[in-house]
Image (tube, rainbow, N blue to C red; front, side, top):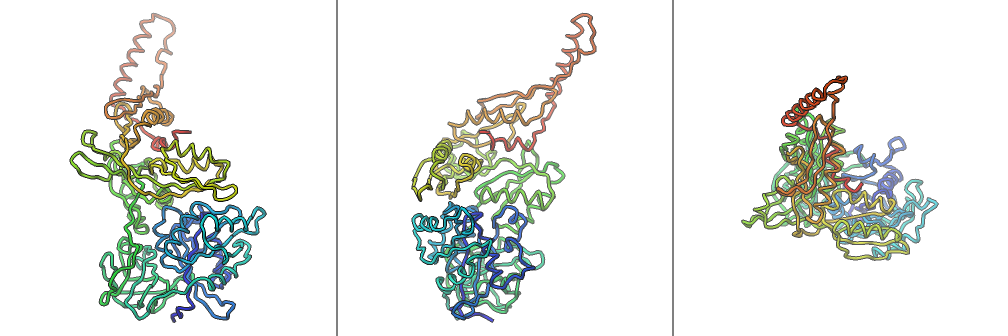
Length: 601
């Protein structure tokens, strides 16, 4: 039974991490009668253990609420719970394009933060109606009216429709639903027109294949219809349709304005791309819905099994992970130091941490992860342009014309007293200041352009450390820019360890080379012979340190007697160590591959 369009409201919740987005979603489901007291649990829409532990949303989720408003009418409210982290910006933008409005949740104690701004501007670009919701008003340190002024000043949106609430204690939750009904527009779209449905998200299910989350923009889709995905051109027959209420509830038809799931025996997640348009095969729409883009990985790292016998297990685990995450990519790679492994691509640092943690936890693998690197664009002297994901793939210096690195626009929100440390950190990372704006009596918004490689390592940790945890940060890659970049090689015992190579700016090469060799000295275990650790640019050694040999006292058994006897034993030991060094191989522990992340410690 489809609902009249005038009584449908489609909305998302957008917020900075830990401002109470998932708690509010739980409360809305509870008050609308969707969850019984027995079913209620924290972060109901966050299905993965990792999402619960970290308090983040990784996959978009949807749920249909029914609400009887003050005017006596029964409304159908489609809530889409979106990821909040910058790594998942594209998924957020597609989720928002499936809505007519958004609840902007802001913590009454914290105020406007970086990710709040990033996602609210995405909503403004999509021309959505935004309702500010000031959460956590029951806390002693809450300042709701200061935060409302901040929203008006910093974001520039109308606060007349703002709602004050506490998701945890249940204060003002009815007012949130009434505001959704009163202030958000109902969906438009001709139900008699040609089918156009936006893919908001998709995930793999072992039993039915890919489940596709769609928002029907125009027309209608029924079970047994033959549909076509406009980006890939593939055709399928619809086997199941339905909505989440909050679990899967089958329907015979989904019409314009409605949000639900579609199952049609799609075998690979890559075939159901987020942002693609679903239409009828025999009566297709003239053009797809706007905004589709292929997601490209921005951060890369190597993953190798500690035990080479686990290589096939690792390959199988990566295949299964890719079934549930089309944005994750991998390809086989061989390292002289680490053997067989994979070069994996991620959307960003959080995405990388999530993938690596899932591999170790869900598939019980012992892995070595190399330090992350970004994509560089290389021009050769023959005029060819290459995308380099790994320093070991960089062409020889004689063939290089230029190396371009990605530049990120970084927005930082910080209390006024921490401006000095933040500016110093950004300048140390080769940043260029773009803007600094006072957004309130004690808050400052600082915008810098910083090479992405400088952010990928430990920028966020250093930012939190230098501001006692009060700073928030958001970034986006805006362009590639040629720079004076070189490849820094690390040699252990005279052999280059390709997994420790990095691409860095020439001005930092001396400091990074000396820092890396010193750090590696702490991690590489002592041998029976001296081990040399060197940093080189091409054939030029720029830094060196030695791991001293363990020395066995071979003269301990000599009680007196001629000195020549002791010399003889020492010479014999020296020859043995020389031979051992010629055939010895060094075991490099996991911590050594992450040494580059802690150079400043």
